[in-house]
Image (tube, rainbow, N blue to C red; front, side, top):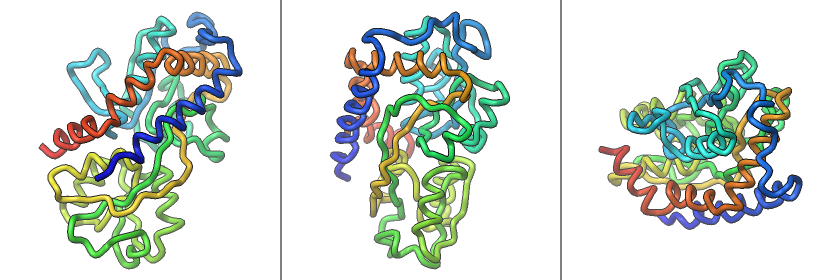
Length: 275
């Protein structure tokens, strides 16, 4: 599949981060680490719903035990603030609702989470760091060619996500089946328990390896991912935004984007997932 749509996302995201940087002093990482209200002193504790490649996945060989675009972003944030990084696997529903953060399980949620008005009622978000699309994945040879063909079909979505909301609003007559994570969704379509998956484009792309599945439609929903924090931790939000600006200014953001979203990177991830 042509991946030019993915590569163009980095241009919009870089521009957005550039605008955010104008509001703070260049090179300023925000509040000093000692001024932050952290769950554990000297450590940035991050919750993420794993696996959700290429954004987050398990990796026993890495220092944190995890890998992915989001993980590399928060590792860079932690490094810039002279903090250790600790990552916890958490359910996405608990992250997007604010329950995990408000319960003190972590300082920050990094989990391919779209910034929405509903979530902003319970969470504070960093500046956006990634622009995404939704997509429809089906088995090769399926009679489903678009979202309009889903009437009477079973569609897998992830609980609590914008993909679930988009499906409920736009897939007329479809039976929407919610799963706790992408892993269960993919197993369901492999077993023929659902006819399609509707979720973030980069994640569905990973499932196109081997030629068994294909993406038949993409949806421009103007979604932007942000790192989520407690609403009353303004110092941490400022510090995180400062680090995101430094990532952009240094060129490190572009390097991370290329690492995970270049055509070669997506092909490698897809082959690994399919093996």
